[in-house]
Length: 506
Figure 1 (cartoon, rainbow, N blue to C red):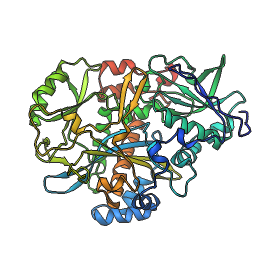
Figure 2: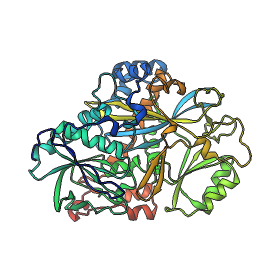
Figure 3: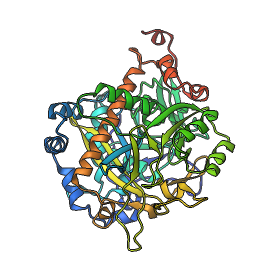
């Protein structure tokens, strides 16, 4: 790979809606291009800063003090068990209470290409690159070190993306600086997946300037059904590989099953992933039965979509009928207990859970919110990387009025799809971890430690399942996957580059 001297300038994307590859050169990071304006002058809250600086040993000591049935050596082993496929994730976590007033952190989703850097101000010890630099230096570069040494002169480094240009370009710029190489930011859109990419012999190539260039290694921010564009058994080193998405990072069905399997393995240790009571592989015609079972209030999810797509909160007959009348792209769904207000949440086998919500504002309104806890594998342990929270548009109500639209009260996602490859965001509902916003969440240091442990457990569960889905030779255990997630539409989408010898491996 040809080494570039820093400071050669950056060629930017053309104006309008035309997609093209962008080229990033070293030492050209401009913070205003990679952070929300609010984050540029924000200061991390001292309590959040204290949490981020805590050593693993201090976190374990505090957690086990508050959970005396958990042995420190068991938790330490989980926090230092090296993942094989999923090295970077972000869990969305609710701050909830049981009917008896016991607080709990509830994992509702784990993402294999999480957002968050643009919303998280650099620490006072960071350069302006902040978490982008920590992610690349401590998580991605150790993974690709061998690939970089073996790279040929024509090989390129690439960041692949389909949304969130602000963050994906930030990663591309920091990667260029840290490697002293050009980095290509490559659109990988669902509408035209082969416009800039080519797969040959399970290796990734980029089409650029009339040439087809081999990719030495790639960082992936492809979030929308990535298995339709990238093969399962890609040989080019990539973070995160597709198996991490199929095992739960972009698949809510397998995520729920991964959580259940890890909880079974952790039985009698005092550790457990807390997540809503969940039914998977549910057919559309079965959903009214589960709605009745949960007392008329559930969450229905299309398992393989994200960014707020395919999530239906159902609290009345009108919302149920609207869901049933809609055409859906897949045949199987996930149905979960609904976490709402104290008087209108689902009652599951273990009782009712409800949102604690934000600290009341000046109008005494309380809003549902979720916390994104981004973590990565760094130098022999899991570490928190970035955090933010999102509140719902409308406040929580003690009682739901007839005809209430529950998504406005419970939906927290900021992304909104405009078209097949077009997205916008609603940052006004963003709650940052700064001196202004953090206190509105009502969270303390112990809450952050608890959320971090839940995020690591969810991460570990998905990586464990990912390892089970890969054959010894690197192929896809399709039969095993189909036994977990037998939606024919999904199975037809998964791209495999079949090698007969490899596929025959036990």
